[in-house]
Image 1 (cartoon, rainbow, N blue to C red):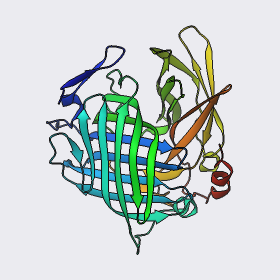
Image 2: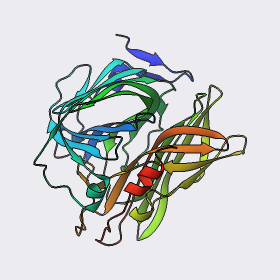
Image 3: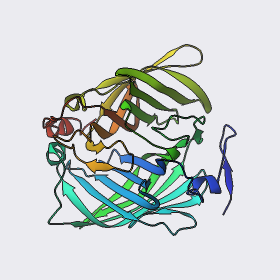
Image 4: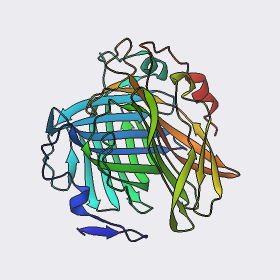
Length: 357
């Protein structure tokens, strides 16, 4: 196995950097997280896979599995385990295998899942399922853009050390007797550092890729400080014509209510030559979780009537249009709920209406 891969713009990611940290610093709320998203727009099958160190004991990994199915339902599983791999990271049944640093990873899960409709998972915390299905996921991620290494910073809501990457994903997803051959766009990130989410007042984490290889990625974050909304991070990058360009976020489709989670929004980026890139952002479906102040606490569904869980988090495969061009990608957003009421949102009609996009 090679020990490092150099990206097109000269950045290098090593095998050691790809793997979990060998040391766990004695720092409050320190954590490490791997997140993977992807969607096959022909099959209408997607995934959000996450492994993160549990803050109560960072030697234990929390795994979360979300699979979007064509008929609009989602498959869900959350568990904990210890990683004993020397070529990746694992929880109980979810494992990520590094086959080539900065280039190829294998994403695998075989185990039980709970199935829920979009309507059910928007109502509130899902009860324990009385019937579980068998899910078998075997996907290969191949990077098709340089690794994007964020500058080190002290923003403890996303960690101090963080990188991301676009990629092509192929493989199979099997649920009970249904087998889906997967081929679609994917994205990944890896983060280390303290993650205390109590001040989060909203964020947008958005990425997309055009068929010709052009791509974009943004992270936009707001905190609440002294009772006021404050932008604390605004970072964007564009891949254009084989070159990596730093961009500026002019505006992003910030979410302020679950009732607008499936509304079409707008992302505007300013490029180095001061021209504007305007993207229409079209979420295809959604999965909602709720975040506690400590990042290791994520629950499926909104936490009704519990002020300890004030921040709903939405995961959304999406389509982006820029003039006549179309990109495929992902939207992740959250907002701070000002009360304890989370009205049920009707999403089935919107999901059906966007099936042909």
